[in-house]
Amino acid sequence: MNPQCIYPFVAVVGQEHMKLGLILNVINPGLSGVLIRGEKGTAKSTAVRALAEILPEIEVVAECPFQLPAEGDPGVCIHCGNEPCRENSSGSARKTVRRKVRVVELPVGATEDRVVGTLDLEHALKEGEKRFEPGILAAAHRGILYVDEVNLLDDHIVDVLLDSAAMGVSTVEREGISFTHPARFTLVGTMNPEEGELRPQLLDRFGLCVRIEGIRDIVARVAIMERRTAFDEDPQEFCRLWEEESQELSRRIRQATALYPKVFIDRQLLMDIASCCLDVGVDGHRGDIIMLKTAKTLAAYDERTAVGRRDIDLAAELALPHRVRRQPLQEIAADVQSLRAVRA
Image 1 (cartoon, helix red, strand yellow):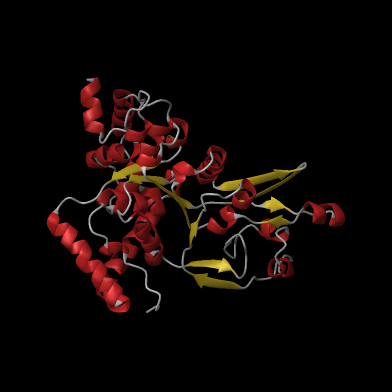
Image 2 (cartoon, helix red, strand yellow):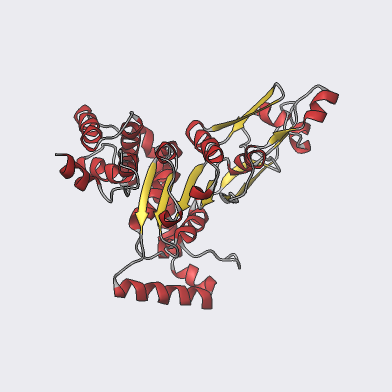
């Protein structure tokens, strides 16, 4: 057991919507991330860091700053300035290693160059070839990009993150030189609404949004104290007690990822998705698309190849409340049912 144990994901008490939103985005990065809104001290950071520990290891080219697999795009590595990649750019087999999925944290004060990376213009002018200095997005490829207090970031930085999360690539353009590299990651943003809200245009770009608060049940609060105390006293033993459940969750995630492309949804359920979005007053079509993807991912996670009504209902709770048109200073709705009732 690793002496630096991470608190197990499956040992987090309650916060089921938060845990589900994280798992769904790991299964299907095409959901474009999850925003976790809630008060401080509700296990937001703990859950994000713990999730990476139970994910399957990935194979990457040794020392590749873009976390590329052996069969990845060699054109990226040729120009990245990384010597091991240059040595193997002729087509010979590249040395690979297996490692855990990384959680890359974005500092609140990060600049755009730090996030997307930059081009070495001096090298380009002297040598006539591009050399890219990777940023945070390159490090997050095939991993988890965790942005704490995302509402305190500059809007243009948030735009860059959400564009990359949606498209799976990052493009840097400097002085007429352009460089594109893969940047497919699970985007997780957390925020405390008391410190300010995101603009509606940015809220809409997060695929899912979950609202969490401190647990009110006394028995559950006692369980939190007992588990945390046990972990602090003997981390290895505590992790060992939860190892079987962690392995089972890891198996379900792997299976759901493989099953997702085979999931089918009846056209009538597509009609229901569109009707739900119209009923609650969602602008545009992103809500419909994310609802569809979420419903299919839920079915895959539940080991089914057909989407059912309960998948649609739960997908609506995760994908729609933060997309509903609101009056200034109006809070984000807690659930979709109340929204439909108000507009009925």
